[in-house]
Image (cartoon, rainbow, N blue to C red):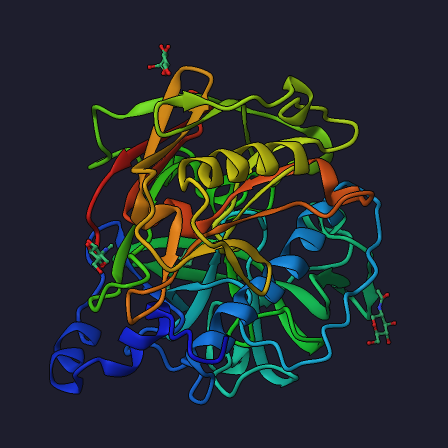
Length: 430
Ligand SMILES: *[C@@H]1O[C@H](CO)[C@@H](O)[C@H](O)[C@H]1NC(C)=O
Ligand SMILES: *[C@@H]1O[C@H](CO)[C@@H](O)[C@H](O)[C@H]1NC(C)=O
Ligand SMILES: *[C@@H]1O[C@H](CO)[C@@H](O)[C@H](O)[C@H]1NC(C)=O
Ligand SMILES: *[C@@H]1O[C@H](CO)[C@@H](O)[C@H](O)[C@H]1NC(C)=O
């Protein structure tokens, strides 16, 4: 197993510094932000010592914590942290530049489409990274009073003197923050009086040390706070894992969005208001629709069951009967070739995979994925694994399907808030 060298990280390490400098200097323009993989050569958060194989295993371990987090978003449920026993790196895998305050201070923050609020590490924060936002240096900064309406929108809020403070969990991390406002700039757009959490203390391993920008659907999300500017519309394209370019994009607002794009209806779950639920109805492996009971996909606002798009989970998670049906069909098509496993991946081969595509069939939209979106390949090219996993059984997480970032890479994902639609189109954004 130690001989499996996965291309995911291989290319990060082989990248040539000369081309990096030029790319990393690219500036964000208009309403479009560059999106970088957290391990990209341009990223200061790139882990330095992880072996390739360990990096894959790490991403799987992070996914477990992530699923726990997504499940915790059912209002009022408190979560039990998962002890992984190892140092865990970042959970969200993509980062963008965010400018905060006057004059503006630039931070590279993690993108999270399943979290509402932005949580920014502030000066003096215990457990954050060294790059923090210094409120004292911003003339437009102000803490929110504890009686402010926003204060009732954050979990476990209380008055810390006159200002609003709150504690929350994020995966296995706990966060203590003050609720504050300042002007922010995204690419060249300004959003005045943006409300976010100024993080004072964090512990545990899930919270990205550099902070995060929430693109979820709830009241404190960037989209909800900038409706006049962006009309609850954005799209993103996540760069491929084996790309050497690493620059995807986040486009904010209705302008310059793809006109012709397949869409499916977004579903709203009042108990998990941040999440982008969709109606997954079937899965095709090659040309065959596999046999999955409809209950595996059923949307249930009370339990949180259903299917979500999430950019913070790396590998798609399917509820057990759906995963087993997909996996068994792929194995059947391999006609008895020797199957092996790697960590949580139970379907790996040392020969070419004979399934050319897997199609997620949503209500009104089929998304056909090429092999690059469902096989993770070793750098030597000799081993390929089905890059999906089964949801753990018998837990609160067992009913949630998550369409994750590996499956989204090199696709443009459009969130059209006013029409409550999610669109998907192939796009080589590497
Ligand atoms: C948040 O947690 C800290 C300990 O980290 C504790 O001192 C504080 O009272 C908590 N605040 C709230 C609002 O629960
Ligand atoms: C900050 O935002 C407020 C509220 O939108 C606005 O009135 C003010 O002009 C902005 N200040 C700067 C320096 O951009
Ligand atoms: C990844 O590499 C394979 C060849 O190993 C290539 O065919 C494919 O286009 C690459 N995918 C991306 C997203 O760059
Ligand atoms: C999706 O593909 C199936 C065939 O597998 C087809 O019957 C259906 O009409 C397609 N749906 C859309 C929206 O194109």
